[in-house]
Length: 286
Image (cartoon, rainbow, N blue to C red; front, side, top):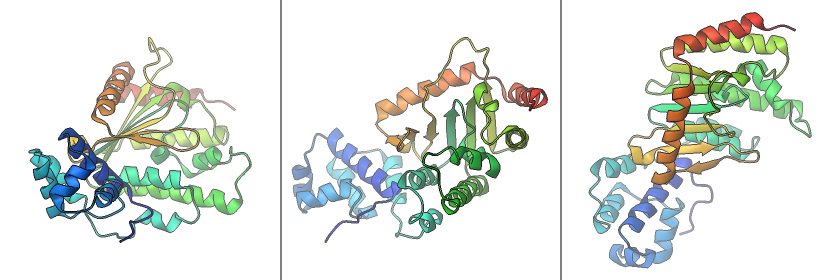
């Protein structure tokens, strides 16, 4: 039976954890296939997210790998859902795969979405005019239809995150993002007003790393760290110029948690960050 061509984020993530479980047990693909009574290509397809693994199959694999991490096993079973249409599927023919992957990653988060940006307001916190200013920088320029579709998509991302009852967004921004004018001064002014409003929400924390910080605490790239149902299902998205990369190795996750610890120590408190945004808004001229 041929495997699926485009596994979802959850299907890829499930496969990656099954592969990690096998490798930690010191088993080869052939050995696990023999223990399961299937072919080696079937194991490969499953670990690539291209074929389904039932909850019973996951428990069988865990038993074969002598994995006793019951919370992880249960969480992996929870990733198995029928292939239902997700809200971003309607954009699949009109938007780059990289944008859709970001939406899938945000949807995958079980609780907190933690972000770091240096010169730009994070996507879910952008106003429509600010997003238009960001996307209008593209060379060659986007058509009006493509531009409007991206803005609509970004607005929908924001709605889905903020409407979710169990998700919160912790945004760490460098102060430079408060003065970078995507779309002009009026657009930035409205964006800062929106940022203040968002900072007053119970499900949003916004903290600014000021220019006066002793050192630049984070990477140049924008980051999104999503917390999974269990720590093993945490994921880091590193935004690159062409397409984001996703990291889920435990060592990488531990490293990026430390990165965010450094950023948090350098950032102002919630209240002081609100004051800095207001002061920036007051000083904004043009």
